[in-house]
Image 1: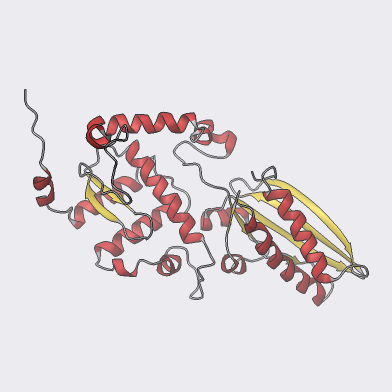
Image 2: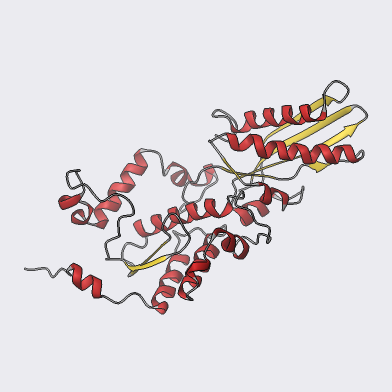
Length: 318
């Protein structure tokens, strides 16, 4: 028995998916159990897809996505990593979807790295290489490569390798880790809320603002976590709820606290909150004497201690 295989020329002549077909595929993805319902991933994917279909792909920059999807102000700065973080998360979710639920879907919707413009291709169309061309001498590539193995075999191979590396550990353990089945493990992300002024004059307000700034400088130095930028932090109220941070930004952790000044004494309270359930993972009080320490020294010292406690390789978050 002979099997008919489309030649490269025949695939090249095949018409691109229509707008109706792409929208049907988009709905198929968003309604799947393999696509997380929380966060802004659905809004992100729908926005870039509709913009591309409307012929406005050239507008899909970090700025426009931040404004339209994440409700950032017109003063959005590239220092705010929310779009890059969410784009990386969305790419992993899409990749997982096509490995599991979408193996036999007619159309692929992808967001290639390096931008936010989606591509729409038939699911049986070979994916173009984005880097160096495959080396045919490398096992598993070239003449005896992935295409000959077939996508189902490749999907199983990837799943086994990821499981061996512990990649799916968080997914498989479910509620014990705060993740549900179908979610993809992500790098730890942290939002720093502006520290609250707990009273006693303008000195506390200045200290609270300065401490927040020091933390925004100290914490990103640790590579174990990703910290949202200044614009995100400034846009939050001091008493922001953990659930708002989770739903609005998709961040895993919220760092918040307050400053109280009484005479020559200053007390800083700090807490690290798990945004998935609002539980306090860590808290600490810091008392300092204003007579013996300068304000900048106190801010720097407290920020350093907080950053070390929560973000170092053996800290609370890692």
